[in-house]
Image 1 (tube, rainbow, N blue to C red):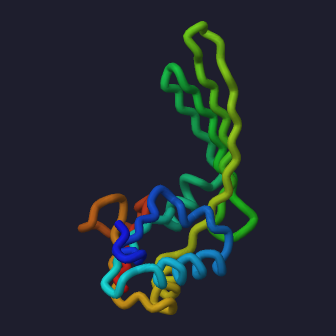
Image 2 (cartoon, rainbow, N blue to C red):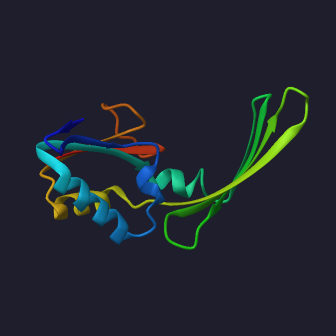
Image 3 (cartoon, rainbow, N blue to C red):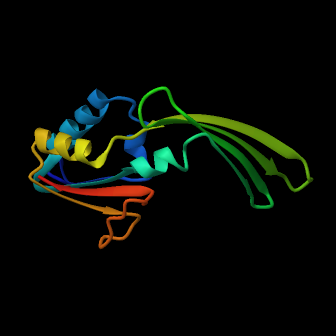
Length: 152
């Protein structure tokens, strides 16, 4: 929502921040969001948890067959702390029973909760709440997704 060219709220979902590769990029993003929010603006985002990076994205392979779409996915531990390379191959079935192959590669990284909280405070966010896995009442150590609600 835009009001007088200032953001009232900003939403970054589905791992958007995990595509930023280093601390500087994350902090610069926080600064830019902060400066575009109104005085009572809210910044909401989610990131992969440390648990998820250390277990589900730690040299694991996944297969997903939906009938018309087949996915082979390797999550390979990255060179940087708490990072992962996703190498995915999709096969899409067409009506004539032929398949098209698509390959994608992604790099993602996360940081621990205390680090994100420190950066948000450093930028100027005054009140930050966290929760896990889409449940505002939960904060589990074995969660896959960590959400932040940061108020200016």
